[in-house]
Length: 306
Image (cartoon, rainbow, N blue to C red):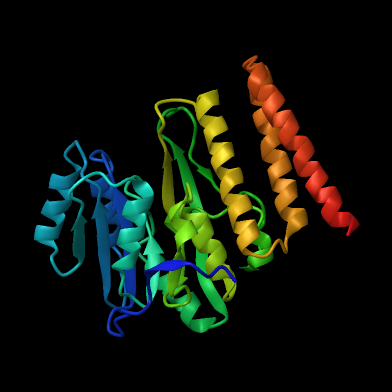
């Protein structure tokens, strides 16, 4: 189990009268945050929910916008205003600490929900399937930097109704804006979580240890891609390195039980990094990723031969 060295408590303050806490974090998202909050406030549900919003000391008008929402909807919006910019992971962790709902939904400040019954549908699934620890759904992907492209569904292939830990341990395929967790299953976040470059996928894995992941085959949210154009090769390399670091960390914490899936994912990401380095004629990185590829293959061969 992914436990040990714990420092961040969650689940000990669950409020039985509060069905859902929506975890939102935001920083310098003045162009998007209003639509994100409005998409939560439009939800039609038969239960109480709250928006717990961690604002990380933005330098634009984001803080003023969220304060105005809290003023207008004091019974729905609970603000956590950072005194200084703490960084995405620290903001995420401290916001996670403050959640009180029986279920946890997540929405980043630049995404938004498109279906007014999204929360109700996910709560209904979790309450009718007690063997599920979380649920997710399809998402519309909108490329803000290329308006000539039509928005695309994230999952274009047929999906299963239920997924397990083994399905997700090799890497993330679930959009943050589609997730709802059952609270209290992950009572403590371990120290190593604070060192991770990403927060959502490790949380998916930790919850998947406690039950199935139920999929709703409907588009209930939209995810924006807006990086001012295409990813640079440097940015893509950084993403691949962070993904490999996260995967290897979780793999160790799971007791190296999923060697085949993990090594296959790492091999795929290292090959992509190698191709990018060759295209950029960055021969230092070419040598680095070639060596890492050989080491990854050696680890897989050694494990297989045991």
